[in-house]
Image 1 (cartoon, rainbow, N blue to C red):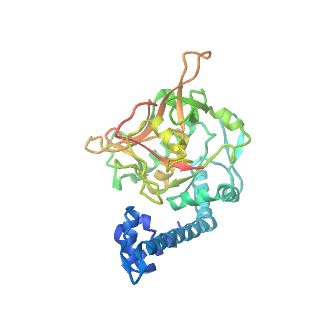
Image 2: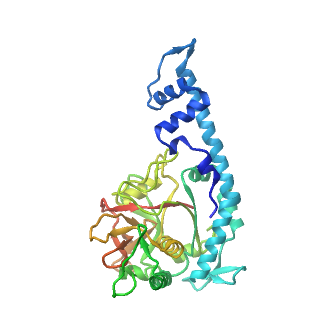
Image 3: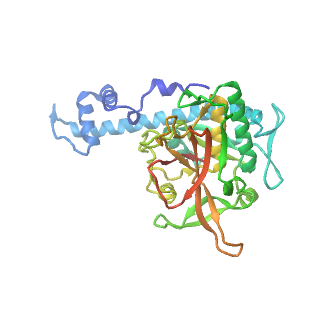
Length: 390
């Protein structure tokens, strides 16, 4: 994969330590301004005088120069992503999805999926994806998210049944097991005579998209609400002609693979790492609150998470999100798929109750990918969240 030259040649102050931050301002406008810039960021202006010039005023100029530099870097990064990186990632991923059996078609030609509604959906083209993410009405938001590290393209065959995607996942695990190339946290997995690892899915979830017991993209009535107001079944989403890529989810993800106890991702451009230990409802509020640094991002569906796991195992031979490690300790963080809510209904006439959220993780002791469910209102210090932009 192409290495973005801007990542190495230009260090953004938000991505660096305080000394590097100060050194950058020092280079631009001098050491006095660099020192006062530190005070400025702490909301404590200095009033010293230097040759009759108020340093605090010069520090304000440093802020303006600093912001202008960041904007220039963001523009360069976004342009490079759309013109080079996105196309390279697209070609590689389409090839992998086809090789894995998650896409049908002819190599070098058109690709498609057969969805749960018995219809075929053509895979999006790189030109369509580029046009969608670079559209004027979304340009500023997407540039900001690219600057925050959302530069990993993922194409999810959303319309495909969960059962089929799970079978592909088991096939990939079997193949890597036979080749002796499976790793967790960069350490090889020591297998026993019990056979290859596998995916274990809570029975109520394994066919939930077909039985309409799982709904997608839930919304709260407002950010003070604790109840899900609206979500849609897969069949309804597939029938929606307003979807940008019918049958598919196309996302920009952050490149970090592992959820960590201290949060997911690094702080970039005023976006702190997503905290762990929140309930699904609390996470939904964070994504729907216009004052939140995570506003506009989306949680992942179970299909998204399955696809991400499969691609990581296929390409890097690496299993993500260890829940129980080799010593039997619960020291990892499990990923909540909050864009998928399981439903609980007493009968067809009763109202929908969005009762559970899928949770996916690796159990090293039992050698299984666990796909379980938890209550929408419960929290745990070992539950975390990945988000994407779409």
